[in-house]
Image (cartoon, one colour):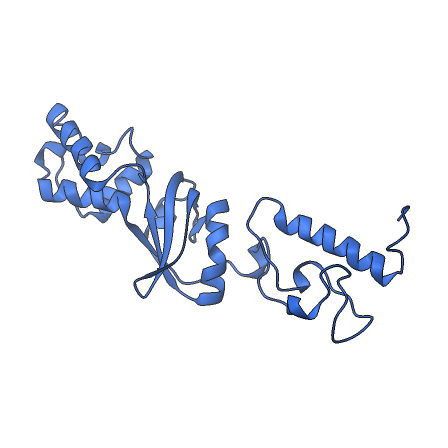
Length: 213
């Protein structure tokens, strides 16, 4: 629920990300964020999306310059103002952020000056703060059709971790995402599917001691 992703469609940027719900940080990480027509994507975003899917709407707080403080960013912008006062305000962040992203930060800061030399310290500081705290309201995920992995499932405590057999219903085996297991991106979910599927299949077929299986 934000006007910014669509205008930034296709832009990729490294950022530190936090999910905030009712003022409390519920998840965070760091990595690439990709803006799409409907929202944000990328591996680091996928890893945070579970909290949105299961916990509901929250604020995504993006820090595009995590290695710099607001004061340091303000200093960089101030130096640029001194050196190039006639530079277009749209180019304030050229060389610091992706051009589209830099222009979007300026637009979000509601600066109206034509040249950066006309920007006040207050406006420069607001731009610097937005680099560190660019907020997007996340109201949901792309749903099952675009999911990389599913969250939820039957309780793992009810299944033998070696044989994958149910402790409640003898002869019933489960594996993969049928069980309540989901991991970060990087092949972990595929590995779990293959490993648990093999164990369930071997034990269900009574082949667990067959070295040729």
